Amino acid sequence: MEEQTKKTVIDVESHGELFHLEGRPCSLSAFSHVPTGRSLPKERTYFNSPKKPDKPSCVYDAVFSGHEELNQKLHRCDRRHAKLIGLHTYEEEATKAVPSLSSSEYGHRLGNQFDPRNRSHARIMLVE
Image (cartoon, rainbow, N blue to C red; front, side, top):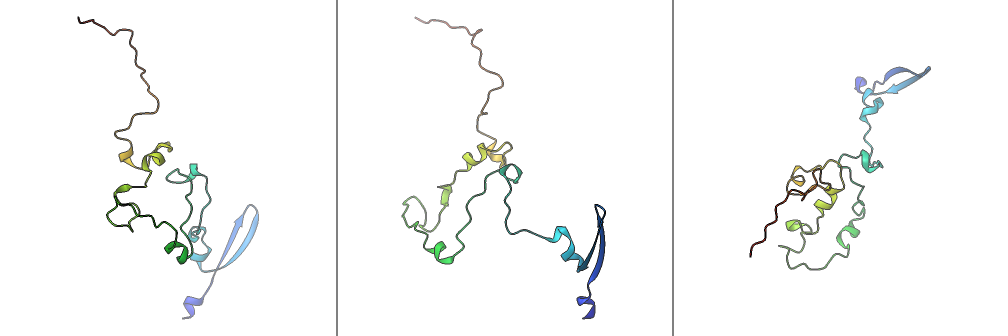
């Protein structure tokens, strides 16, 4: 039991200053801290998308959110995104420089055309 309560002493020198740290090494490490929320700009996030509003923190607000309209096309009325209704995947992927979904790269035209169409050498024939 004494080994578990034993604290480690670490002396750190940074920018000419000496720091004396006491505690367990896992709690003293900078990599052991995981923040609960991050406020990074959208360019620094993994998916390169702006932060969406969080879910309701209160259970009452989550249950009685006011979205009680019935959608006849859904399989069951409690499934919000059944058959991808209400999701805007393409609009979110189009704003990113590098899409996070590989399926969003196929089947869509490029925003800018590298080889513009040139009709100067086209043959036009008149059929009577």
